[in-house]
Length: 293
Ligand SMILES: NC(=O)c1ccc[n+]([C@@H]2O[C@H](COP(=O)([O-])OP(=O)(O)OC[C@H]3O[C@@H](n4cnc5c(N)ncnc54)[C@H](OP(=O)(O)O)[C@@H]3O)[C@@H](O)[C@H]2O)c1
Image 1 (cartoon, rainbow, N blue to C red):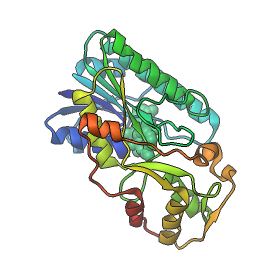
Image 2 (image 1 turned 180 degrees about the horizontal axis):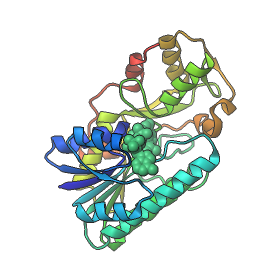
Image 3 (image 1 turned 135 degrees about the horizontal axis):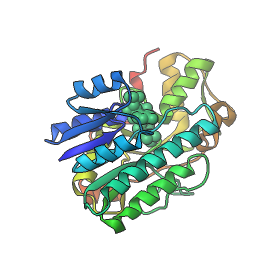
Image 4 (image 1 turned 90 degrees about the vertical axis):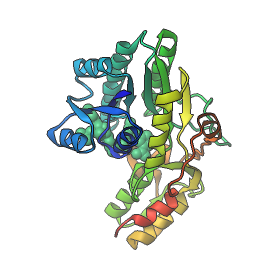
């Protein structure tokens, strides 16, 4: 397949591009800068210059492809307004690509997140949260999945809070960044809350499997570790950085504080069984051993 991808130069997207090319697909990659275009070309993809806000470019990319994978998201979490703007930009971009695919029966795989359910690991049939700071992303994913009714083979790959590679990425990566800045490897609450995780190279395989074979309107869980206690994550980070490990107020983590404080394990049993997905790369706690002081 010729696959159009957004976010193909990111931590996860670069793994997806390699996975696609390694399995005989060709890749057209949205690239918003010269540096991103060079990175995409080096990875073996054809760059398509433009950003998520360039709706004509997205329309053209989706229109030229046999399938689309969406991963791009603005990385500015500095304020609630910045997050709102990134969500609005993503919604417009996803809607444009979805419209371009209506009636084509082509696959459209979008990134999503694992939901949280009180007292148990969330499963693929649990609904996405549609309120809170990132609820807008959930509402948009639901709208894209509904295009299954209009001749688009839509699917969502729900990622856990931490998608890691070489000791970095996701919420655990944010904990590391805050620890380096504050001199304390902190965790909110009592640290027993569990966060799920997956290695980026394993997540990439699931994006390919969803592109190739997921039925229309379905959601999948790219979960390698069902849930690591946040205190255990902070303990490895503290040891690697030579910093004390302590409970800290959730406000230390800005808009993410309330999400960081939640117990949110997630299961991928159905995904493994139905799509034959099997994670093979190291766990989060093993990968964090790659953190350099
Ligand atoms: N990492 C995690 O643990 C995790 C967990 C759950 C969900 N996710 C989601 O997974 C997706 C990918 O995450 P990631 O960790 O791979 O992110 P990342 O490393 O920050 O990469 C982001 C990608 O999106 C591109 N991008 C950002 N804003 C763009 C814009 N306005 N126009 C065009 N391209 C834009 C970036 O392009 P440049 O190369 O030009 O910067 C890059 O390719 C995101 O939707 C993220 O929210 C990630």
